[in-house]
Length: 92
Image (cartoon, rainbow, N blue to C red; front, side):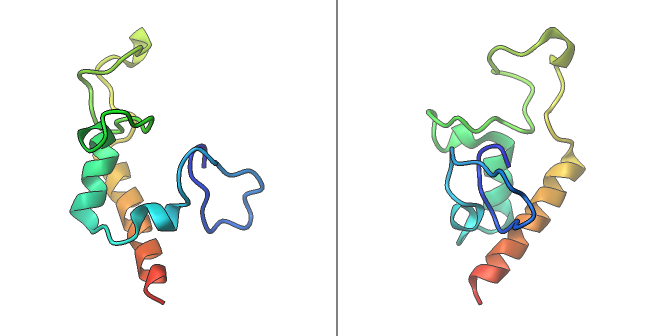
C-alpha cells in the first residue's frame, strides 16, 4: 500500500510511487512474481522496490535487522497467491 495502489476500496490512502498492482503483475506467473519480490533489482538495477527476501548486498540496514529478510518464505508465497488472484481478475 505504500508504493502501489490496488483494488482495495476500503483503503483510503494508497501508494502512487509505482504502477497499480493489477498492471504491475499482469502477464506474470508465480515464478516471475517470486523473482521480482525476492529481488527486483535483478531486473532493474535502478528500482526503488526493496528486496524482500535477501540478506546480502543491501544498503543502510539498521544493525538490529542485519541478516534478516523483510518477509519470510511463507509470507512471500502468500503475497504471490494474492497477486495471482489479481491476474485472474485481469482475464475477466
